[in-house]
Length: 392
Image (cartoon, rainbow, N blue to C red; front, side):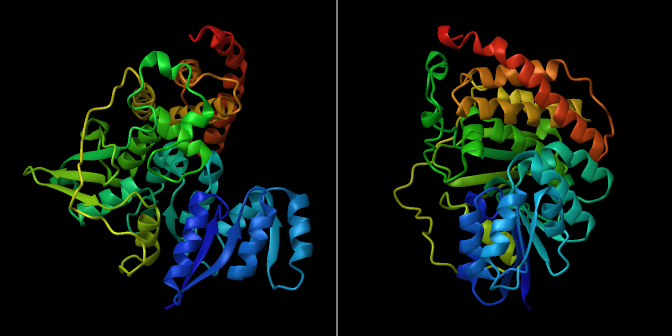
């Protein structure tokens, strides 16, 4: 049976690797919708290669140019957030891969789930921001959401269908990023180029910086809570520099089940796309011999984003949306050279300190919290950047 895929975020790192996986899987898989941000040239190339029914770009002018260039193909072209929602609900799609970055992935994820689509989810923010809402609406069916994160894919595989009552703890592994061995005074001088030099993974700039601050792992704690129903105090982060053990589940009898493999995102992507089957591929295999695997506790004083994420999950309501928006602004400013690396968590904490939580929020309240946090972060930026020259 042909599996028809709508891919949201096709020109980013996960999107490009997803298309590589689809190409390798061959017959039995078809792309019916592709969406992108502003990379019109790459999207046009992808449309010509995979022949989708729908293509979407963020900007209307770019979409108009794309439509003109694709006059020889039967492909509908749309633009903006409405186009993303159209792709998420595209009637022909069986599986919607959400590889959008940031808050922009939340509403398309919600739309796809409400439409009854199976969602392969690489957008962390959909669960960070909207996990509580999705849970209230009964949209967290484990057969409907297939995580693309290597960690949550590993947890899903390690659980093997075991009920929550048999789970003692989830172990989320983290590479520690490029700064795991740096001293605090070094971190204050870390540059965007150094933060983007991840030792193990090929990722986009935003998620790579999140890995360096460990906010990525904080987000994954929140994701794991909503995906698997495990409370915060039973989710542990462990630094594992080799990125071979992708995460593990500890059961009540002391047994630990872990999923191992090379640090290659194509593996969890293929697992989600081919689920419930497993299919052969030509990619590098894990070699047992000659490996040294190490595990240490994270330094939460040096990387306070872990605790900020835990605080947001405990607060609930709109606080996770506030956390996410403040983090997006802080990372953007750091990459632009306008904010010190160590000021990323400081800015986030200050925004959270001033947020008045709205409980049991709907989509509009989450959008308002996102907007408020971005505005507040902008107001606080000048205060923090004043201290950049003295390394504070």
